[in-house]
Image 1: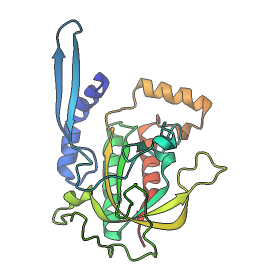
Image 2: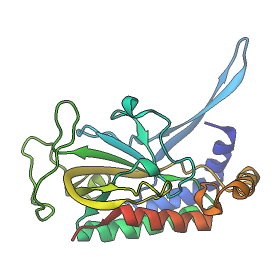
Image 3: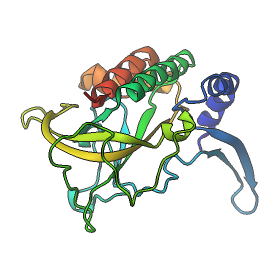
Image 4: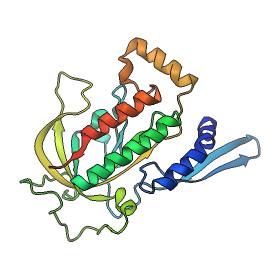
Length: 263
């Protein structure tokens, strides 16, 4: 990790500890240790690294991975479609689904996202993402997705071969939520930076795994200069380098549009 990220982690460490202690269901990625190794020899340097929780440590295979920020500038994968696979990290403009959670889960979700964003905003952090992994309950061996057909009340779908999720502890199911549904969306061809497409009515039964990552970028002078430079060329609100308050508001607005309450 960069030295600047190390400094940010050390700066926010006390507040970070208090936040994850106060909110055991926080979506903010868990950090367990910060280390530095001195490499000696011809090339001497320090290598810094942090031990973090593995968000995708699951019995479910991940078919799609999305890194979502709520910004549009440069927010597409750099891979051609023929090279995209289940390990490809897709971005905001690659997202072609909206996701539905059961009412009780959705209410807890929005409350926790609000608390996490308030914490990050107070610490002057921006450029973080919601990392979302999607397991489609019905997919062919070749990886083709199979729609669930007629819409049924969420939670009624059962797959006897799928791993069961513990519902004893909210945190255990927080990042692995089985009662979820995805609806395919389609963007307008004449709107290049449309973040949320139009729902098509094509549904998929899914398991969602999610968490907030990349929380070590503060709004320093380099990010302020980046924002000023890009604002000359592009819509200032479309870039990821914006003031933490604006970033937090935009992030929440976008996340609550693509992860919704299932009716």
